[in-house]
Image (cartoon, rainbow over all chains, first blue to last red; front, side, top):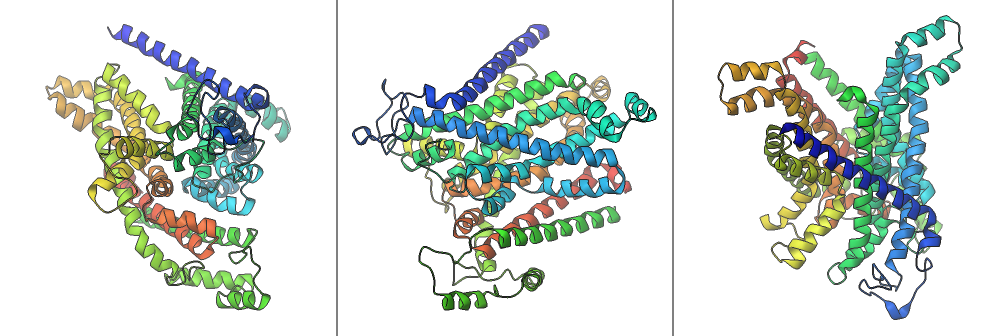
Length: 282
Length: 305
């Protein structure tokens, strides 16, 4: 009985994992290939087809300016992926560098640097993020910098923790005894050992960034560019639909579903990766 | 114990000071000012306005004036609302936000504890798998999507509840669920996994072997040892509730502090932005301090400090 249940649990989570992987790859592909796979050009206004419900010609319907919604959602994937991956990479570089230095040097500098991280870690992300966006502007570049500056602390903590652990490993002590340079020890011996947890955090910080960006665009504090030919944020699309929800719910439904499913899939993927890369956990 | 709490208090004050300073620097660096509008103001008028708000003084003096104001609980005038100061706006709107936050927290606790307990006890049953799936959804769904969905279903389609007001019990249900769903899902999932670990421990077998009823084993022995991890996440969850309230107040048109914060950012009403940020930080610090107190109460090992 117990065994068959466990097997069933395994099968269900495998299915969800495969679904998540496929979905994430599909969103990424949509983001990169939007100009080639979308049925209509970006930013085309058609007066004759304003606010159409979903049909064969327009699978997701059209919006208040007669733009094909499927096209807009596909181009929106480009914004979400750029924000998600870009933020994760900025945070990764900043945070790991900070954590590696702090953990490797140790002592009172380490204490001080980690106290700073504690303070940032406790503050509400969205609050700092809104304040930073005042400074960097409401465009994709400014948003990336602001989001990156908010989410680096997680990487800093993990990188430092792993370094402290790795410093105790015998092969690191061995390398030091042989007179290897500090830089070499960090790059050759410690970095490869801290990669697992960092990959997991990387996977989780992509949906967090997508969530933050779409929420901010929804409340009007995110990317402020509704006519962009490069792509409009899913959050702004949802905001459009929100205003017309009573009569045309489809305009809200499709962008909202895209945001929700993407975040869900990335979270699921992160969970699966953390189980996979952390065998000691189970 | 006293030293431990004093240390935490000092740490909290330092956090408030650092946030106050960072906000000040950030807003002074930000491009564009609150009085930049489409129509350029004549320089004399602009000079008058700047003199009124002390913006013509050197920055260190402005900073000291600002800090002195905070100590005297004077958060300055709002640039946008000429009839009310920042303090009055916060006094007017904070109770609404606090009520929303408390309702959401109570909702989260009421939903998550039974769910976590049942899911852990009937591990791998259909009820466990259903709760886990719901929790996964609850953690991933953004506030604005859940809020919009609830409004569409319960207010627009079924007509059971109203949205866009905040005056009677019925109008508070949907915002409470929207804000409380993610913490509920989070606590339930956490409680489930810590309870499953606890139920596998030896002391549970001992408790059962000495003939305790299942209810006592589960509630007293297993749950008692699973409370600490839940308590640990209460600090971050408070932060999540605070920022979630911006969005929920926006979606449901609730006249709380978060909605004023959003409009203040759009208006570049700097004193109001700084005031609300400080209040949020102070609330967060206070919540973390409370968590520390509870921690000391629940876990006797802490009291040694």
